Image 1 (cartoon, rainbow, N blue to C red):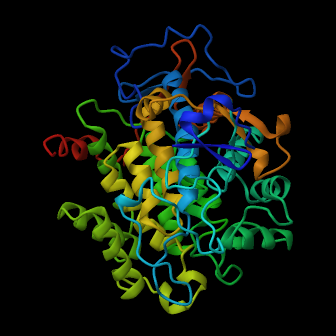
Image 2 (image 1 turned 90 degrees about the vertical axis):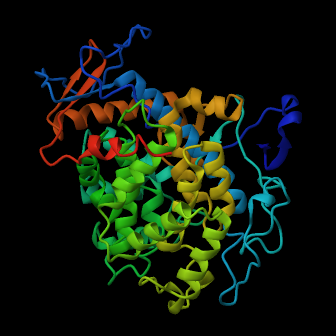
Image 3 (image 1 turned 30 degrees about the vertical axis):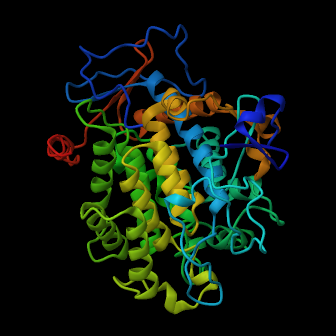
Length: 486
């Protein structure tokens, strides 16, 4: 395991002499009010000074979630996402296959973990400067996590929701936020569809026109699926609300299948708030994935990709064999309507939404709810490897919380975050911390519960009352079917 000191890789065993400077389906919730454990260890209940908390008469059918527990899970989200993001960056675009002018040889396997990193497609023969070996890249307690494109747009959207006192961002609020917080000149840490959307905003277009195929030829790229998952956490147990909140942010950069893939992740994040102590973490993760799959049209290539990867997993194939079969089926043979290879794009569409979605399902299913194993598989699977790792690191970090992450890795981590590594014009010169970021997330949920869900916030008990919609997913029955499965 490696940590970073001004671009130098420092083995963990030697890190004690250095100071590093570098710019959670387990919510104790869904219980009845009678048996809910009210938070008594925290003497001060956090309260949003910008929100008028209204009285609410609870219903017997309301779901009840602990705000204090949720804050801890949101901390875990940011921490888990950062660990996974920076680890995935080591192998980002190292392995994309052998079609077209750029050929990267055999894909990585589990045996390449802790072995020397190989150069990426743009590395000019030089391996990653984050770690000489394929290993976890983490920030210790005296360090600062740097933002990256897997965390910074989500940070910005959270900031925009809170400062605008909004639950659904308008086209103008999205545009104004992008133009204020994203550098126009390079290096601005934008690529493909994100960069095109910014260019279109500078020309006067507003979302969703910034993703319209007539204006943005990159609308099928990966961008939206790594910048919008967080909306699922703003609507706990209510994917219907989360998808409303995420609809326009997703369509700032994505359309068609790319948009549906992004919605898949948003739904999984919203479902992570369900609690069932009888399910293992593996069962919970697989149940969430199956529920999110239900919204994908059966005829779409994302649905067929999910079904194919799941069939390979259930047949007992190794994740490496499944990854090789995904490459053969979708990039070599172009099956199930996935025809990116025929477009003759740079690096054979290695930034495309589809192939990276398929890769993400591999690490999700084979990782089986283990955050360490999921990140390792994600980093080794190939293509834009920091994106699936960040998505699942954030999800699993939420599900197990801060302490769960520390136990999984056997160490404590930095809680500070430098958004100004990649973005601009945020308070405190861009230096934030996960506790503050999680608190802001709770405040956004407060507003969403009151204004979009028509539910209630009980500050005395430190809980949310979340109404169950009439057309709610048949959650209990679908989870019950899992309890007898391995």
